[in-house]
Length: 360
Image (cartoon, rainbow, N blue to C red; front, top):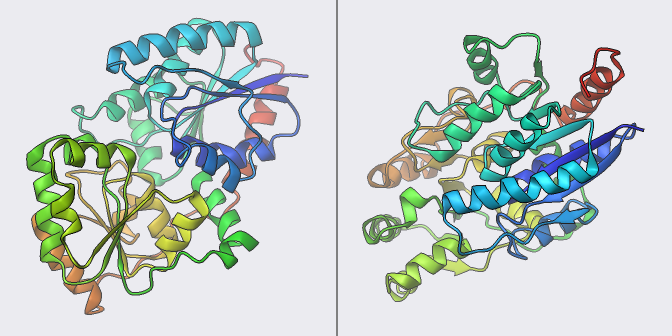
């Protein structure tokens, strides 16, 4: 039996990987968790919410490493594990450093790579994720595409026969959860209120950026619920600004939520303010207005037909008022965001691996 390795390292990777893993029954599967983002609230709970088996291998990535130290550790330790396993295919997800390290190691070992969420581009090389995306795509043998812009990007970059438009496996996980009994019974609801998430370095790594979040929250009159990311909380405490946030009467800061509870909170919110990538897609599927505090996005479909709008901190209140006045744009889910993306991926992988010319 052929062997497939899945490499995951961050919360979104688990969400994208879970349905893919569950739909592959024709090969032995080994899941490697790099530990890149290890926090019980962001790792173990996502595994529980999606009914995933525990990872077969979990690396002990030191928390105090910088960017290049982290990459060095990941490359070295993934090379050891992948050499031991000797897989026929490595499946990579998204654009985190674990994905980049997995691509470098697998390519050097001449192991075919399937990249889930291939072709997305922000066209902003100041973002580490953009560099990761481009390098991983260049090294991959199979490019699984979620939206038309990604297809166009890959064609422009010279890819063709390796592209497979399958849809979005993150939506597969979302559909599975919202149809589950735990979701129906979940008590986390946010009817009529604003859901806030913010964790990108550009938005939380300086006093100035934290002050912009504070000023934004003060300008909004509606209730805001903020399940705060551990990284963001650490920065706010580091800058001695937690008391200032707690003094905002309409702001409720809560602990991070497990995946199921967070989806229930999102689906029942009036709108979401975020800087996340995946949340732009999830809100589009749920038709919940989303204001993304970023200069660009690698997911333009969420803007062109979805519920997402790119905003600055200074313009958030303008769009919030539009939404509460029911003057915000209409939206629709993109093509193939139907809950069956992972089935299409599984079928394509099987077809490739049964091909007599498949590269070992």
